[in-house]
Image 1 (cartoon, rainbow over the protein chains, first blue to last red):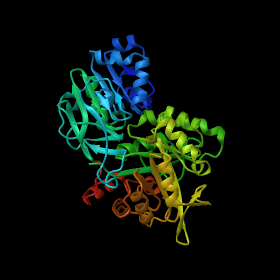
Image 2 (image 1 turned 180 degrees about the horizontal axis):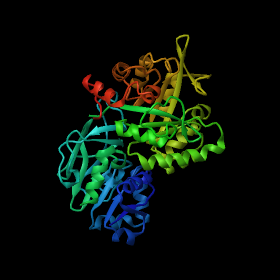
Image 3 (image 1 turned 30 degrees about the vertical axis):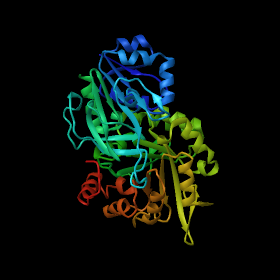
Image 4 (image 1 turned 180 degrees about the vertical axis):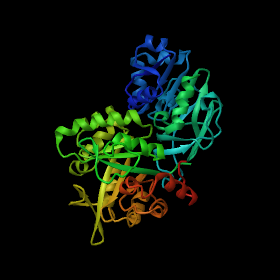
Length: 197
Length: 251
């Protein structure tokens, strides 16, 4: 099995590669359209700013390729947000795989909730094979200022300021706001579940 | 619920752990990777590596170490000590660090915070502030607390936040090494003032000190070194104590 990790101008890609290496998966970091199309699984990591990332994806024609891929696909962090329809971050139209909007955390009282949401928070209302073996006490590591709204595609929620989509699923597309590569044994389990889909 | 973070800090010199490590299960007490793995398995929420290597030519050792740590553990970690340029940050992040921490370099040239935040994102830029109270006023100190500056701690914390720091690591030089508890007052003051997380450091001596810094001190995370290294407070015990005291903690 070959896993393609999409290479673009997003940070922290190295950590995703190390996590896959720990799980014994054969992974390549690539922005080559053909290599990505041929891979058994695709991981779309992310960290950074939405409009800059979308511009890069367009330059590489990855914006055309990604929504049409048929193999299991996993968007992580900014990768989850970019799979949505639109992000409030610099008013950016995204890939549209999920008909979901990405919004900025705006707490009523800024002193109650710091933004970004940084640290370990738990998932609840878990569904589907991606979260097999996990429960409502499963903590994952978050670092983000924008969140995906709840929808029929939400397969796990997290509460911070409000309930938002911790993970999402539609057809072959899976997505997660937290960083599985930094989320200890829980993150490892989610990655392992994805690899065995 | 977002949990409070427990962060062991490891001092590194020439790629090896120094001072205060007393783990019986360690085959090599000087191996930072092995120690990091133990802390991560024990439930530490994050780790900080503080490089105290004096010479510039040994810096390469640090990047190599960061890669080894990143390959071995699956929790976030920060690397600090002697970082002063955008290039330094790039090397460490590419090697696998999740965040870097800057201290003296930010005091010397505050614009570096903006430059680093713009280049890599605020989320990976931690600004460490060493503070000491002098006649009732809190002043920023550098060089391990030895050198006083004219910067007032509260104003400096506000400034680094506005310049794009993602987190503040606040060490009270008055409390550091005393084991008498964290500096709850100034930690609470700064944490309430800012929209970014504050990591409290300096003074941890018992489990109640952690409870105090998370409640009275309003800290988002607490960092300590020797009490963890010498197993005076094992992390699993600390976490179950805090859980029992109704502090939100990752199980």
